[in-house]
Image (cartoon, rainbow, N blue to C red; front, side, top):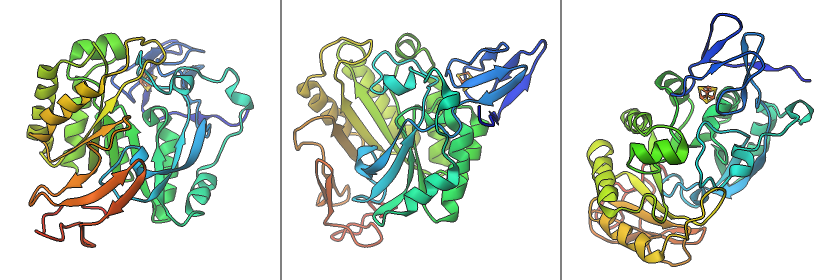
Length: 338
Ligand code: SF4
């Protein structure tokens, strides 16, 4: 067994019990047990970050695939993930790494932050590192060590997250993470409770924190047949986004396909289009994901309506913006990071 990394954000209790304060579950964990995320383990009253250095997947992806459509469009980002998650979504697309933890993590190769950052700087079109695939919050210690290292190399750090993390660790991440894509899975506590075994309120609070901090923020909402496809609720969510986070907030509406424990039929393209039509009346930038149609992919200038970014699958052409991200016709600031 390699040297295990002590976890951050926990308290020691009586009789080898520990309480983890990393996410709003606040798990109380007995000796030899792990928290709900399955990767933070109590060994004799100390909490260890079991997945430190363990990588389940890595590769260079177009940044549009995260999805981030307004953050250095057309570039690649070195994407890495590990194991475990603090949510238990019945519709998880990556359940094989989020809910299946390798039985013998001790025998797995462990990467170093320096080694991974070295890989990231090796490709010219790469702008940084994305923590994605499983929930990066439960990989907190390793993510932070990588992100600190990558900043020294002038790379950008991106977190693709469920947003279910406590304010203090999130605040610590703000020093190193440049952009967030947060899943807003539904606008209903009941959905969060029954379908993800977590809570909506902390996610909303964190969206506001990320926005107030001035970080780049995009939101993804997966629309699931019969589960969160009530158009009234959806409109309520979009209005909340516009009111609390601003109408320039980027929203990705994504089509669901049956996977893991969810067998409802795929979301119809019509439903997705209806939701797009609702959202685009309220927000400036709305996109449709997981569909083959060309609708809902391009960016139009909110100022004058001119098409400024063309997208076709993962090919991106920034055609109507100047080098500061302003519309070349009317001067509207469309992108902050180009
Ligand atoms: S990070 Fe894991 S162990 Fe800690 S509170 Fe959340 S689910 Fe529990």
